[in-house]
Amino acid sequence: MTTALLVIDVQQGNTAEAYDRAGVIARIRGLIDRARADDVPVIWVQHEAGPFVPGSEAWQIVEEVRPGEGDPVVAKTYLDSFAGTDLRARLDALGVTRLVLCGAATDACVRSTAARSQVEGYDTVLVADGHTTDEGPWPLPLPDGSTVPVGAKEMIAFTNFFVADTEYPGITTEVVTAEEVTW
Image (tube, rainbow, N blue to C red):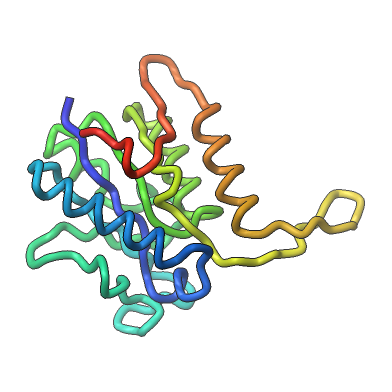
């Protein structure tokens, strides 16, 4: 089994107001360092739509975790890191069968990529304390027209629950802390 670390959209524009930003970025940095030390491929995903205009400040990967020279970076325009990208081909070329996921934003790109990873047949590990989103809360609409305030803590907890609770035939799914990640 070959494992890769997928660092999803850790960009200035979606981490500036993020919940536990410093802690999450530090844990992602630690994962990157551990992966490199253990010869585990690190693959970067960078969003290039909406406010994430290539070259803009919002588009930049945060300085603390920027890819090294020659590191693979997958540019994407959809929330799902597989949609409309060559991510699957890159993973296949490396023989990857297991993905460890971390990044931003929890409620969008991380959740959709985790779900797609499972659908694509990858054993999937979500780093429970390695993803974040804006603090919020956002007034999310209910069918009756009322709203429910949902913030980062709820989004993170729900995403961890959702990924851990999702099963597909023949694959394993884990939600573990950065400290518990194994390759």
